Image (cartoon, rainbow, N blue to C red; front, side, top):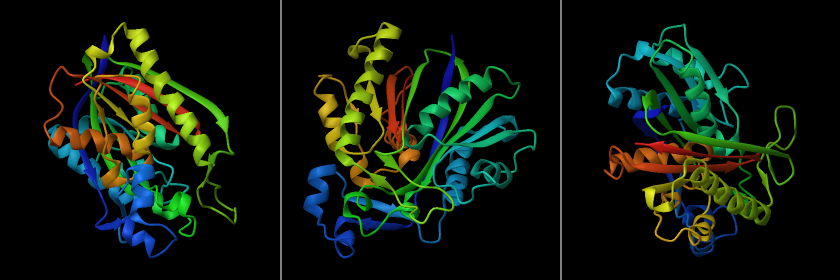
Length: 309
């Protein structure tokens, strides 16, 4: 089976750390209220940085660690909902900044918090049909740009950041599922030309959707691959809310669910690759391990994937 291999990862974060106490000076909230409901204690907000600059830095770090000929990269995808421009794409600017050849397929992918996993499927398909060996998949978000800092129900949940993965084909197990179900009411952000361009969210409905989406993603991967939870080393979910992950994990006793939203908050399309890079850095992911990644987000979109490390 021609599957996907993660060759290397890299992440980039803004310099500014914003704690829950910092937010309490801007909006009616406090550390206890935020942390007990979400597990979040801090996040990063851009000042000088942008979605584009974070994507470029994360990509540079991943390519450097991969120790590959970067001219063998034939695909650049940036999963983002907060690009610096409507056009050009962030991916095009990454291609230019890294000095890649011009014969590269470069574009942004918009699937909100599911973007990185959607991108895995696209990278797999393109790599099967092109001569160059590598794809560069990046999740990069400047969520602070679209937050209403007067809305305590949403502004405390999100953060900025980026992470990248260098991917190639390998004879290993890879399986992915993806879904969408059009919904522009429960979680949305208006586009160019609208007066209100801030995130709008109905938290309780998103919670219920997320719990179902994660369970479906895990269950269908196990069913389609014939595996059991004993075969899975980690489940890496989109890092939106600790309560969501804890609620789902009760169904899968003995399975290790990775969590890091306490340090980064919800970084949308960047959350899963940030988690993977952190896990690699901490020596948690070894060759041969099998993990399930699950993403869910506005759209509604959701996706899950079995990856062999």
